[in-house]
Length: 461
Image 1 (cartoon, rainbow, N blue to C red):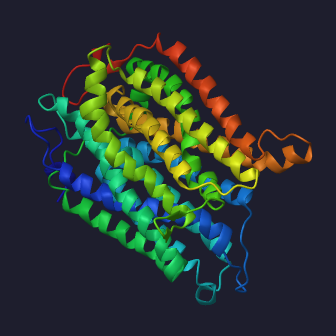
Image 2 (spheres, rainbow, N blue to C red):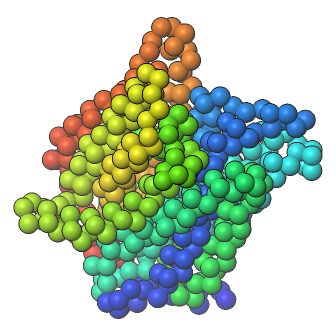
Image 3 (cartoon, rainbow, N blue to C red):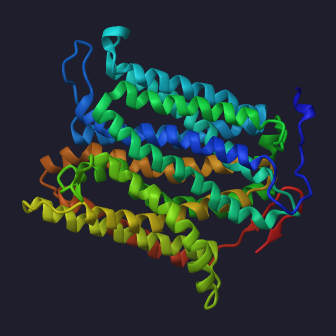
């Protein structure tokens, strides 16, 4: 069916749009594939990576952390490419379908890394190729999926947008929780080939589910060359100017948050991971984050925010400010745990679970809110573009900081500087997060923005 046969404007209904179920189903399976792969990547590089000759070729923790976070830089830098491709040429639907195929190919190549005797290729080279393809697929579709959700809503059901963004985030973590529990077990029991292969199958399912919903979606047409005119228009320049400081401040949040997939896994290796007689793998505790998102999203939405509204307005910027301070507390807990470990102790993993609960509360306050702001504060024609800018500046920027810092640790230690060694590593990031939060709260008093919803005029606040 041609694109012209698809609906290009939202239905004037007060209920949830009919295509939302397909988007949520796609998101659960796609997030299972991504987080399942990501959950075991660090452990794979530090414990399972082999050479072409079949001998161990594992990375040290600093190198693996660099690789992990440069991969994440790609995942969150390429959304801007996906956004431009979507808004300029293909539209959101065709961009998502096209890049999902690259995503599936990346999973297939990653599953082959464990079979050098079959491929005849150097595993580290295949790993690099796989991560590039996964970055292109996972990164390229990110702004399109988020903006595609918002495109389904019009003026009659716009009040459901905050709820659907919360449930969109809920679906992300439903898929993530399941995968981060399953794939570490698959890695331990069946090896990297199976552990990386299962997420690939889920990505293929995600692509199929999204294709099934094509007739239910609102397909906002690509703007062609008008995209670049829209980007430099007064409204767009104003929106970018207003939101860019928010993205820069939240860069530090993502710098800390994404270390749960690397440094927190490394710390868990030195902790007592026996829970009620059951021994867990270090990477399995990443699932705690997703599990508590599933718990905390409805708690914040139905209890905490309404209760706070009785005393003061719960604005997006207040949520973000509170979340930045909360995130700092989680790294302070990690610093105390690391001090215990460095002193020869063997602390129970419950202490890291506590840190996960705290950083998850920070995530609910910061990440969901910025995701919603990036959509609602962007003019209609550049919503995917703005999502891409957010991911490039805030999330990719935070991971660049982590990768660069870890790349310099050995040089700092050789020069006699110990502020990134042992517990000091966590204290340094804690202090940086507190400083960022203080400056953000001061800046937020001067923020002014506009809200743009498909099918109605902009509103200023």
